[in-house]
Length: 133
Image (cartoon, rainbow, N blue to C red; front, side, top):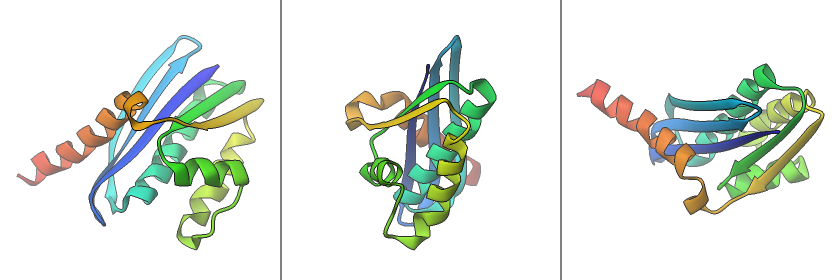
């Protein structure tokens, strides 16, 4: 089973943003820290989910468990529905990606248990700040 910890961060609304993805299991230990276009926190969280799922597709077709501290992302995935149309394309793409796994689970976790993904997301923002001088 792959465990995927995801987090998105924004320094503003919108502001400099980044995603963090930590994948472990089945012999994998993958850490992704990527800057994304300036956006809000919810968009960043969904983009982290998509990036994590895209990477997981390369690693397994078996069991995948995503862990996120974003209630919006977790509830949208569980209900396969989101009221805010801004996030609907993310949800649709994520649901399509999950079809490639034998089993898919998503679970909300508290912030303090999502430290690795959080640090990776914040590093992506710092990288942008340094680049701007």
